[in-house]
Length: 283
Ligand code: DHB
Ligand code: FE
Image (cartoon, rainbow, N blue to C red; front, side, top):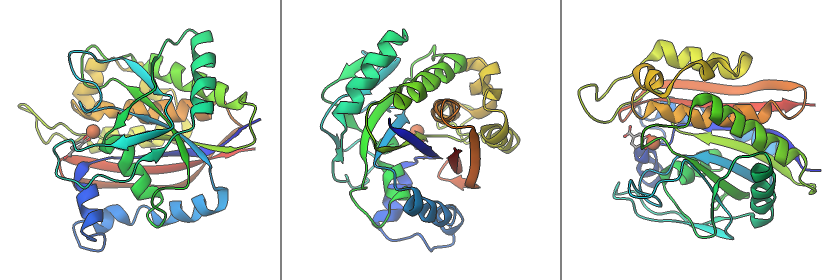
């Protein structure tokens, strides 16, 4: 059976893609952010995941307000990164893992999560930037992916509890995949940020640090909040922390617990409080 080796989460700001393209990682503005990654690179060298299930939120590239699934899953052989208007270079297509996609579709549907199945799917910065950050020296990244989109754009959002249960169902489904490959689960987005309106620039360090701690020791903590409460606490785009929550929930279904490999928190990059975290599943 397949094995979940661990979970990864990171912010996914488009400006990161521009900084990478321009080689700015060592500049004073960027260094505290990029310094969060080398311990995670070392760990990835050790555990060598071969497949990654990626919880991400589409920002209007693949879906728009006219048709926006709450949950959608890719079942394609590759996922093309397209220009979204942020001015960042498009990266090479990410290789898909249709066999895991279809296994997840079967298992999740049986578990009463009815995802929109996308046999063609473009991916945006939320899906591509994590691979540039986690595998900077291996482009394209040496993993096949299954992207799972969660709506964080059009309200009402799925409840944090529902997202947590989806993550658990994904964790269980990976655990019964009849395949020997090593799987990582990735969540991308957050932490606190708000890009528009009266509270543009809003950041909540206290909440972010509580959330990061909960990822380690109390994974259900964030399920107590409604979508509106999450907006209040983390900002209209900070609700992307739901991707982290889904990732973390998947890990609860694997092994006996998690070990923190590394985490980093840095304010700001662009308008966002950035976080990165790697958790290893304990046997
Ligand atoms: C920014 C953050 C995001 O999560 C995003 O999707 C786009 C932009 C930002 O802070 O610039
Ligand atoms: Fe975003």
